[in-house]
Length: 297
Image (cartoon, rainbow, N blue to C red; front, side):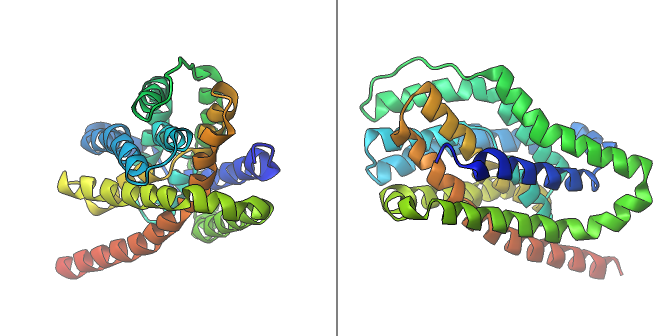
């Protein structure tokens, strides 16, 4: 699993292309509005670093997972939002600027969240806590390459050649959806010999966590008074995790393929509730906008 070219090369390249396209839809004004309205960012971080870890522990306990699998599930919850969360937020017609902001901040907090939550999980579920250190520098460089640089390129194109950006923008959604579906299908095909056993062992717990994370993240946003698009964004950012990073940490720092297993399965199954959220989100936003237009008229 850890040697898959689709995980190491294919997915990062696809994400960079998608993020560049997303940058075509953003302006500096979008980020200034977030600075003026910090509440959605705060709610998103509460969802990611309080709600999600609690769900990780609860699901691991509810499914009575063995120690290493339980720790692996909590490790997934401790990692930052995945780069694909930005693309999926775009497809769901959420607030992309908010999504990018939450992804960046969650990545910067990871060097604290991973050791704290993983050691707690090792203690709670019966293992022996051990000190681990996340390579902060490589993590930030990885995030900058996958998310920040492509978005900045897209934004620069929009600023320099707005007519070109307008021509390309309508095709971005369809392209992004196609790329994500192809990557997910390819990963399933490559790991087809192991997928059945892996799914039986940790699949139900991973899928439950993914559904609960997106669902409760969205509800947290709405209960907190966020507008529809911001609530959709919070749900997506809470549920779509950097499962690849979880696998890398498990295999290199903890040296445990068993702890890496939940990350591998979550990385596949999280797209089921995420893509469902895309479909539901697009419809909900369209209805909301249509209602607003009707009331304005």
